[in-house]
Image (tube, rainbow over all chains, first blue to last red; front, top):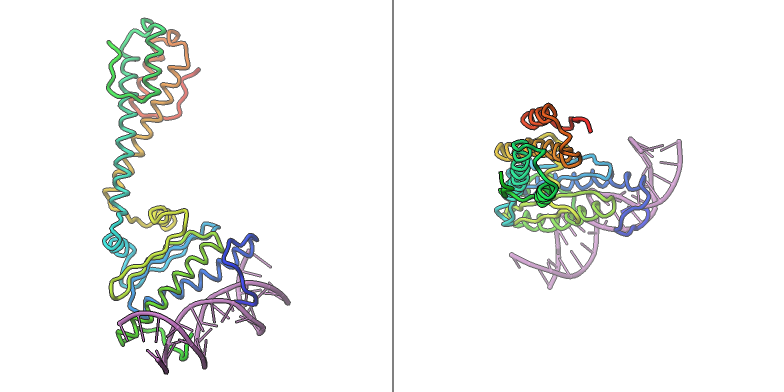
Amino acid sequence: MGRGKIEIKRIENSSNRQVTYSKRKNGILKKAKEISVLCDAQVSLILFGASGKMHEYISPSTTLIDVLDRYQRASGKTLWDAKHENLSNEIDRIKKENDSMQIELRHLKGEDITSLNYKELMNLEEALENGLTGQDFGG
Amino acid sequence: MGRGKIEIKRIENSSNRQVTYSKRKNGILKKAKEISVLCDAQVSLILFGASGKMHEYISPSTTLIDVLDRYQRASGKTLWDAKHENLSNEIDRIKKENDSMQIELRHLKGEDITSLNYKELMNLEEALENGLTGQDFGG
DNA sequence: GCGGCTATATATAAGCT
DNA sequence: TAGCTTATATATAGCCG
């Protein structure tokens, strides 16, 4: 669509790439508006250029959240549930690490530290590195 | 872009609307792929036609969730509900505690433990309870 | 690097089957 | 109804200031 035909592959020249992005971004945003108006379609378009700048188009009379809800129902994929699960799992993982450390710290602080011998310290260190939970080092 | 010029307004004839949707859907999906490849852009495009059928394009090497996370950061808008925010906050909180403990443990393990005196232990304990991060207890 | 300017490449509205 | 075709409308690559 220009003076010359181009291959669809990454434009190596960064300044040409930027110019092309800017032009095509306008083009695709326009197309998104058009299809949404002409065909009564619900559209969500989000673009991030290499420079990091964001552009978006969401059809009128809807919201991105509506689109995403519908996306989940139509695709069977989960977004917030997946997100929710990821977060929950991360919390579990971190909490375990956390508990483990707290237990070890309690031991460290609760004992007469000078009474720990070398072997006990090694056990402790190993336990910490393994992130074991609930293991008791005798107190 | 055809035999005749058209106005950008809802196509009333439902079968024309469907045909136009189908054609333009292909066009915009192609455009989305092209800009993503040519310009190294991160793109998310979700379309629902009036018939309810969904089509999507997400740039390779990313996921819709990534795009949405980035969208939230860039736009300042929240997509996930309050529940997710709470989880995120909890993660932040726990991670801080965690980091704090790791720092202290590193100190404990890195030192000759018998050299810690009572006061140092008290400082340590206080720091842990306050969840302070990055504070140095002298090594 | 940015905003116009064309020549060309593409997309697509109508038609046709 | 769904494709295929073709004349036109658009998009845009390469340039220029």
